[in-house]
Amino acid sequence: MDNCIFCKIISGDIPSATIFENDEFKVILDRFPGNQGHVLIMPKQHCANIFDIDSDKAGRLFSLAVKIAGVMKKTLGFTDMNVLQNNGEIAGQTVPHFHLHLIPRYENDGVQIKWKQLDLTDEQIENVRKKISENL
Ligand code: AMP
Ligand code: ZN
Image (cartoon, rainbow, N blue to C red; front, side, top):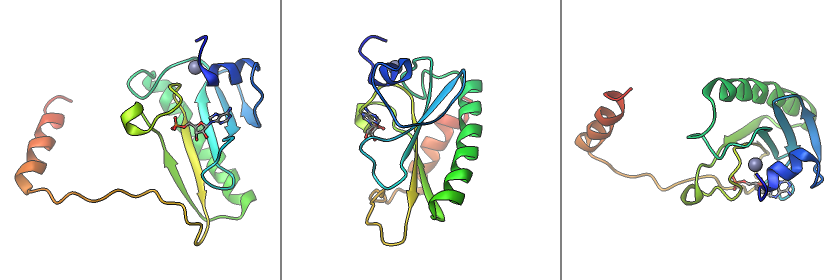
């Protein structure tokens, strides 16, 4: 993808702080991190988001995430972490090349990842449950 910033990082046209790479994935430090040690894991082959990625590849990506998260925890001195993944502009995705965020959390770090909770009725919950469940 010519205009994709992460494809350019993967090809080496744009520099990055690379932590790990293999045939399938590249793992880098976020250049504008939400917290110290904010890591991004991305597939090397361009795909936009969760609706576009091959599910087996997504599985392998998450296995790699578990490994990287464990090493980060051992080496960076934190205990907690947010794992995030945005899909589409409305959901806050700014780079349309699939990536998983690993964000270490430190006591009183001031990072906010929180939404206002909706007060739905049981009926509303059931309507949504049915729509998804019956189509799986
Ligand atoms: P998202 O908003 O989920 O699409 O996340 C995109 C992430 O890419 C943001 O956290 C940015 O800080 C990060 N980012 C943007 N440009 C670069 C870059 N050149 N190198 C590394 N990370 C970047
Ligand atoms: Zn790309």
